[in-house]
Length: 359
Image (cartoon, rainbow, N blue to C red):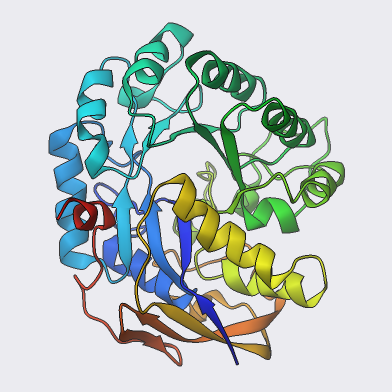
């Protein structure tokens, strides 16, 4: 049995408000605890999106009632809410900017709409941007111009990680994260078909990449600051439909996949802790969780099964994968929150870490 600090996942889609048939604050935090994750940062593209005080309060009220692990909630940048989100920054995990891959209130399809956010959002909190290849490059340019930190979400391509490496070498304030599915899975779609047909359960954004991209991520592990799941649950019926929504669940498979990589010598335990605890805490200025740790049976070998998981979505892209390392016990703030497959803390035990900082 090994003892590790509780993990922090900086990229989680909770689906509440608006799509609680996929996930809610109760189920997502149960899944987190079962995966050894004791703090999650929730994304703002819910229905309605979290982009002002009323919607932030809507999400935080639901979390306060239901969450079983600790949390913070991102705000979404919109075309005309720069002053509003800046004033709310101390209450939020950070600011998420969807540059060209979303719709509605959070769509920023003109670079002039980025400027107020880069000018006014407090520099002690990072702005999170999608890794959208050349759009990401524009985001890095903005970070250099406005001399402020940005964090790049779910890096998946060789060109992206090499650009981030070059930006870091120039002293630009950029950090980044990678998801397990982009580290461990390779696209089975040919270049000619890529983006032209639906990929069923394997539909995800960013798309699964080629082997050379996966190899580049592993070769530049020192450039990657965080492991993040981009936990994006959809039901099996939705994924098997004619128009499958993109996204994978990931909270319960993050740690076993990483521990398996440790067992294979592709990763060290120190890498795992640095990129799943220390760096997320530093990048997002998160408080330490006192009396919080996880106990893992590092020799337990088993197959990943969605039927054994807590997420509402009922499936996993890693179904049947052989992994090594099982979470046996999770202690959160001195209380056993999970043990031997059972959640032992009640709804509402999780705390808003931003509210704690303001007390």
